Length: 142
Image (cartoon, one colour):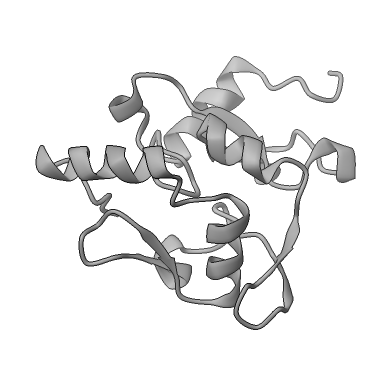
């Protein structure tokens, strides 16, 4: 197999492991009506692999904002930290929802840096979360 090829079977397994939602902003596929992308936690361009342990699900916008970044600066401590790893780290240890459920708040340097780098509170996503909350589909639960 050439680098960058991910079999349908492996894609399906990763989708199921991620519960069919973005590992970063937790947006479910069913709410956006489209499949999420397979994200390389460590990008191929930086030596990552197509192995299952390096793959997770991401919405197109989070994946685009992440790009080939693996480390970013925490806006509070100015410390360089790794971006949140949805395969190895627990979302609720690094993030929480605002009281209104519209915003993702970083609890740790990793959480804050990831919110900033991936723009997890994009205006259009905040508006979508507001709507999803009105129909009882948000905030996401574990």
